[in-house]
Image (tube, rainbow, N blue to C red):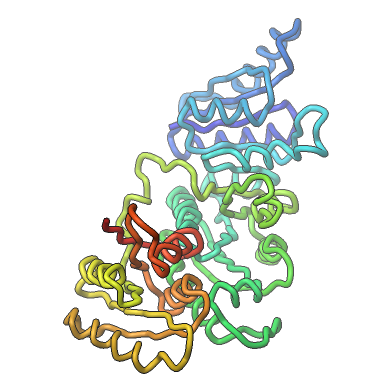
Length: 421
């Protein structure tokens, strides 16, 4: 594997190259220095010589260093070289703008974070990272998590650092009350100074589960912070208070209006951090030893039904995929409270027919079926949601046609949509 480091001959980029070299030596990987210049001109030989001088200062028998002189936009050139080299990491200094376009497109690290499919380390203070790479000190890392399944990539990144050197992990979850109420389908007044008991239960359980996923660190502490604004500021405060040398954060890499509406925690952390930041694309490429290929633990499966054939097939599949040591929860959603007795009787009948000991039955009253199923899954700590999906012919089933689609886009818990034509 290879590390790629962008360099523009500034002190910040030289600091980044020193950190990149230290990490490459630690991993036993090669290093590529990339410089991007305007279109080829008479100074090309001088740039080649300067770039080779930077490489020579880092190169030793344990570290092969090569160079790439490119002519284009820096963020595009770095990403292209990283893709061609199958780089495991991109390293940049915490400065750098496209020539003449600073206020339009932002800094090179921010643009690279928005487009790359590979982990990106933006170096602001090289000292903690260099000392950690040499084995001279422990590295304190603030790890931002949203408790979704995709944040496993951020946990994996923390574990990889722990495997290379001593680390202390601070796992942070930022709570925005209106968002939590909507996601967990809660009603009633919102108190910003204290947590709803359901929110506290779900968040605490999620943090405990992710704590158990962290391996090799000297210490792991998890905590949540409440905010009335965006999530970046609490992470920045956590890093400052904890004396962290690194913030690790995931990037959903939204684009256009979707990014404007939802914001970007990774972008705001990069923009405001006083320390180095490791950005992990949450939907990027997996390395050859992909942690994503490891089977996840399945402790609870939720199966939703409206007692139609599509719903019963979802129950059957849920029974088939739920391990014998795990629990199964059957749920149905009603629109009127007076439907509860009949729905409860039907659901219990389905549970008895499945003949599975310890099966839980939940009847939920709600106008938003998908939101209720997703919220119930989170509240009970489900590892998987199982729902029916209508087939390709005819009109979509009013329950499962729309609900399955909604769950596939909004649920934090993985969804198995059972489709039979």
